[in-house]
Length: 487
Image 1 (cartoon, rainbow, N blue to C red):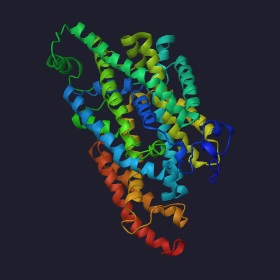
Image 2: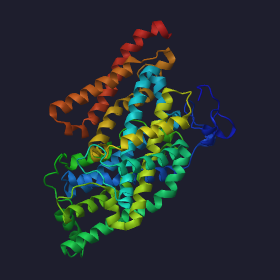
Image 3: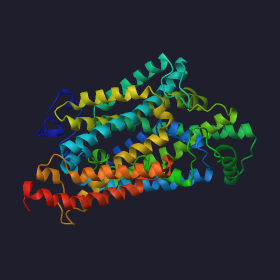
Image 4: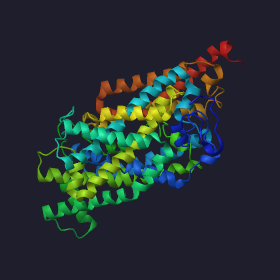
């Protein structure tokens, strides 16, 4: 779509036929009042995206990490609350004032060259994340068609059936994502309510299986808590290749597993459609339904699998769901993977489309889905999902700090916001230094103190990025103003 494309009556954007079919995504102009969405759209999207197939990967990985019952429950309560507050107070207020995609807003701040580098990094990381979600859905097909599926330590595809299943699921997900945010939101609203019920069933079925198998007598909440501590989340050593999780690991993982979206500001692209900034609280539907109830339910299923056979460490959502809920469980895994991968591929498509703005967003999103599908063939992404989401959040976090500082603080400090746009500079070195030096700081901490610190280092890293951006802007804006910008 051309940068100067105008919004026509009803919100359709000039461009290809497919873009018109999508209703126009306003990649390079503010979303008009007529196209804003109500609170329900965001409730459905966040519930669908975060109560999804990947919860059947993440929940078991907590058990594999040797977490205790107290550390898991309390860590999820605190960490998810911090995540919701990050959407409400950091991301949504900027989104509803500027109403721009993250990528176009960064272009105004950073310049087209720096933002293209960021867009590539952002798009690639989102492709990998969506690939993990496609992997999850493909495990359900493995139960149906009985082809060999990857184990906890596998890195590469291990059968032709696995490759074909991934291709089929990835193609379906990519087409839905290509039709734009409104289609993604409608799909999520249809699928989310019954998926939530199926995940709840997973938890109750898993508990019943534990009670029957152990002969435990449950007469009170105290009895249930004793079962949780002694049979489900027992603490102790993690499985080979996994990091030992404590309360702080769980808290920071729950907070920062979506860091790229809230602290990193990627969901500016989502909340620019919101009528009010307080709609950010809709993220709670994902955090406390998906990242609390669903993670706990999935943990129970995997703990029961280990209870039956301690050597059976494979983390395969399809078989886990089938053992708990039969055919309904398999359908849930497939559809849940769609609702999670759809908005992720949509975000990645926006990132790549921002690099080549004249290209059709529909076609770019389809190509993005192809990249995600190829990534999904390699199970290492899903089997190392805890570490991967921490890493990609850390990679994108510094630019979120740049956006926050540029939007709220620059004018108060006597500096120019959207400096690249005002000065005509294609590369804002202040923003570039904030990104590169912050990643250097985070990398140095992990090298010195261990790579398990990736779960924690992003918090101080955000403040490092903010301070570096302010200080570098003071020098940079003064240096380039005589050449490119009048005082």
